[in-house]
Amino acid sequence: MTATTAAWLAGAGSALRGEPAIPGDKSISHRAVLLAALADGVSRIDGFLEGADTRATAAICGQLGVRIDAPEDGVRLVHGVGIEGLQAPAAALDCGNAGTAMRLLAGLLAGQRFDSTLLGDASLSRRPMARVTEPLARMGARIDTDAGHAPLRIHGGRPLHGIDYTLPVASAQVKSALLLAGLYARGETVVREPRPTRDCSERMLEAFGYPIGYGAGHATLCGGGRLRATDVAVPADFSSAAFFLVAATLVPGSQLRLRRVGMHPRRTGLLPVLRAMGADIVVADAREHGGEPVADLIVRHAPLHGIEVPAELVADMIDEFPALCVAAACAQGATVIRGAAELRVKESDRIATMAAGLRALGAAVEERSDGAVIHGGRLQAGTVASHGDHRIAMAFAVAAQRAAGEVRIEDVANVATSFPGFGALARELGFGLREA
Ligand SMILES: O=C(O)C1=C[C@@H](OP(=O)(O)O)[C@@H](O)[C@H](O)C1
Ligand SMILES: C=C(OP(=O)(O)O)C(=O)O
Image 1 (cartoon, rainbow, N blue to C red):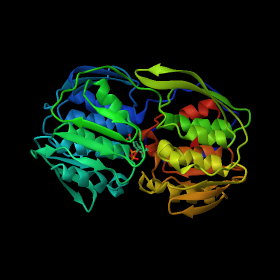
Image 2 (cartoon, rainbow, N blue to C red):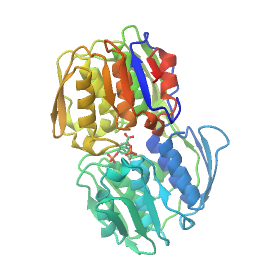
Image 3 (cartoon, rainbow, N blue to C red):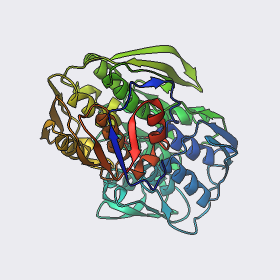
């Protein structure tokens, strides 16, 4: 499958069997390369996600004067330039489709001596950026936007000061942007969250030797410290594994073992939800890998029934809703999702795109402002639009395995942002899936 693949034709394949290698965690890969760039010394990153999003972050670090070697796939040697060592870029910095890249870099670049501009593709240019630029402005930054959207024109040379900020929406990206700006701020930066989100920035700052205090729902650091190069071992991305957890659950006769999957509790909310629906997923060999909790996940086919998804788990499974919606559409009874309005501002409006796609396959879906009610049943053949959203495309490849006929999935090139090679791997495991 190449990045230029326009569409997939997918339909029932065989029982899914195997031990697929799931690519590296996207959130951790972004942070590893950014912090390694700012560190003193050379850091080695193993398990780096070779996705378009994380490559964009690495390429931007290159434009900022950081040498990054890629001796083999999934490995980066980052020659850190030190906390004050970034250089003014010669051109605008293109984040592509990556919200994480744009928001984290907005914080990092707000603290530099030089001006810079962050750009994104059409989808990223529609996503809300005031959620980072407003609190950054309170820290003293000056960032011009196009009515709250990219491009972000960041003015350098502004002295920053710490703030005590409570996030209006739970967002690890906004939290991380403020912490990165906080590295350059006078005094203390405190970030409080309405619900705890993934703490990979906090853990990674700690791993690079930066003094930071954090716990469930808050993080605090002071500017003026330094980062020490370190080696990072990136676990497999739970969000990528999620598609195979759902697929193997849905397809009779399936059994998969997903190895060394990142099991941070702020990322694995889908597990208790799928189990409550009847899924058979065993967590085996739980251990630490590079300071992160990982495990092998063994999943076998099981019939599912609908549930009310607990709203308190939404942040812990924010990227897994496309996959969950497919599980719900194949379950017996109704599944109710609430408290998930954030899904409307992802790479696509994931509530609307999932509802439209499932309806195109004959499912009954009631769309709500902050979620949906999905009535399970038999999926039919049809054509679905992914709106260039990687997770929507992969979710419908899974749905197609249970459809009564062939499903055409449009606009799948962006799968390369988070899961390059998904199509080939899925086929190897037994998916019915080919390029249109
Ligand atoms: O910090 C991160 O790496 C991410 C945080 C989440 O976004 P929000 O911070 O917008 O919730 C998530 O959806 C995204 O895929 C990755
Ligand atoms: C929302 C996502 O990523 P980002 O915000 O980095 O574009 C995602 O990967 O589902």
